Structures are given as C-alpha cells and as structure tokens.
Amino acid sequence: MRPINYIILHCSGTRASRNFSGDDIDRCHRLRGFSRAGYHYYVRKNGTIEKMRPEDMPGAHCYGHNKDSIGVCYEGGLDENGHPGDTRTPAQKRSLREIVRALKQDYPQAKIVGHRDLSPDLNRNGIIEPHERLKECPCFDATDEYADVELLPQGYSGNL
Image 1: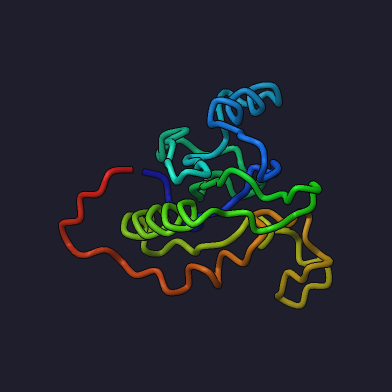
Image 2: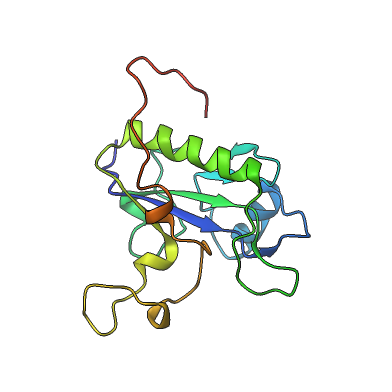
C-alpha cells in the first residue's frame, strides 16, 4: 500500500440547489483527461457515500499530493448565487465524519486537511491565509472540524 499522509476534503463546486452525482463527477473528470473520477469517495446530499476509486490507486484531486493522500468530496460547496459556502446537509456532515473517522483508523498518521489548505504559502509564514488560497474548497475549515476525530474501537468492521 502507498503511504497516506493526508486525508483531503473537497467540495464538488456545485450549487446546493442542484444534484450532482458520482457519475457526473466521473464524467467531468474523464472530460478533463483523467482515467476516472479523481476522488476516492463522494458524499451525496442525502449522506450516501459513493466509492469512486480504490484507495491503493493515487487520486487526481490535489496537485502535488495525489500520491500520498485519499480524496473525499462532498456534493455542493456553492450557495444559490454560486458563491462559496458551507452547504453540507446534516446527513452529509454525519457521513463525512463517519468516513474521516474510518480513514483515520486505516491511516492514523494522516493529517486531515481541506484542499484549500494545500495552496502555496506565498508569504512563507507557515500559514495558508485566505488571500493565498487557490480555491475555497471545501468551504469550511476541515482541520478544525475534524480535530476531535478519534480512532474507532479495535475490531470495527464498518462498510465504506
């Protein structure tokens, strides 16, 4: 298995009022030249977790970090006017926490970050400040949101 240093959270960059399925993600990524969807998991508004690519296959979701990360994307990320916003439904929040916890069980050394947190640190102060972000994705602070994620009990056999 490849080393996993990051669990990277993303949003699909679609309006909360529109449906955008895993098949839609796959189609868009193939049009961009990828062999398949670049994320490993996709969380729909109803909380359904769709497996998009095997974990042992590098992703195509965060330039410079695909080889050592698992990509998790949620449906949404834009408000009704097309502006970045935390549009996660309660079901998505529960499912995202579930998948992040399960991934931390498998990759306890992995750091949980948002795609935006891996933007270049232009002023080299060690902090990715809002003006340095290449994008707002995932439209919330993933590191802070999941700072309390604990490893699951020994013998956990949840399904992802």
